[in-house]
Length: 110
Image (cartoon, rainbow, N blue to C red; front, side, top):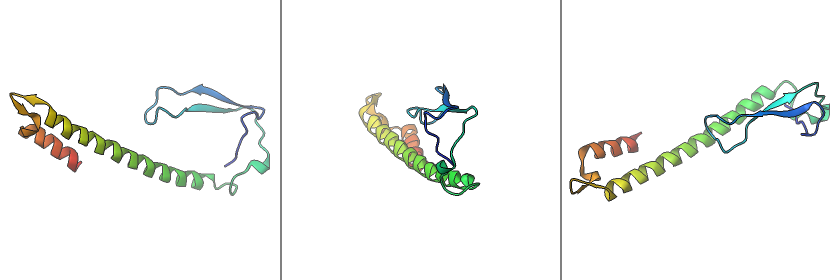
């Protein structure tokens, strides 16, 4: 694993990736290395051990994404419950209908 300064000769950003899944707010682009020379002092960690370092980072990232997903799901269920109490059909709140109760219950269980 190594660091490359953005003004290093031979290094540039390629095309920006815009139509992607996941966290769309984070900028993602190709990194182009064309005869780019990186000094040995820019090595981070131990040589030939970058894969293990990156896998550890992926584990941490996955945990963070899982936590965000749980928070988003919780908020969605809260909004579902609130809306089912506010909205009426046939003179009754939606939350009184069995099908809505099933959907809310499955969402809590999921």
